Image (cartoon, rainbow, N blue to C red):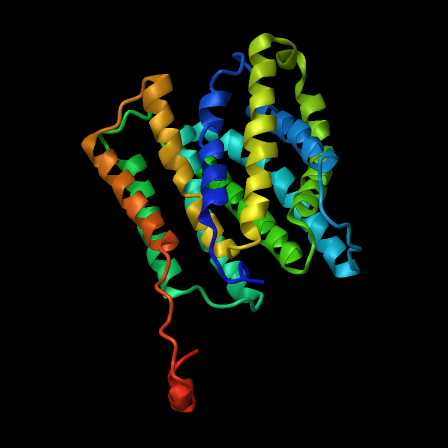
Length: 308
């Protein structure tokens, strides 16, 4: 299995680019559309698409794995219920940074508390740089976000980051147990789609019958849920969940660039510097280490103590 120990950042970074379009797309929803309804509608349709198109070998889930799957589905369902209202209260940029800035920290703690290894020094450095870069982008007084950071919105965004870390961790656990990534994501998101369907129906579906509403829902379903989580699930086969959640901190940078190019927002020089720090963090995390020097057989015994 030559790929078992390789980090494959490209699929996760591609998923982050797709997720970065979420805020811009949601901003085109018809006026008066409930924030949670937008995200839940995208999840309901996208989750069902993931379930219907799941491929790979079907394996039986053990009792503990079924509970893990249910936990992951509840976390997936909790993300739009917390994140989208946070966006409505604090703005796209601030909510995205708070959620995705908290997620790697939660992911690292989950891995540590569940006995799956301590965070590496490389991950700690990359995560710290990424969070600093994101914070500079948002907290810059010269930025043009147009939103004050609302305490309840900030708390909801952090809760969204926690749910994201939980379902990423669950997906990673099930995939590492031998289940196909497509089937894991399909099962988790298909069940989550059923969990959020009452929210969509309770908040009203009239907005979905408008051309703009339907276009927003389809974009969120096809690109930011179906395609993005297909890529994310594949990436989790080769990348630790702690590294994966740090890699997705590329999303705020994509959201900021789209805000400038599409929505007409402006970024100050300080914000661009924050984006550069974020790019440096991702470079630290994705840079490949040079292969280790092969130790001659005569010296192998002597060198065993000094190598892992």
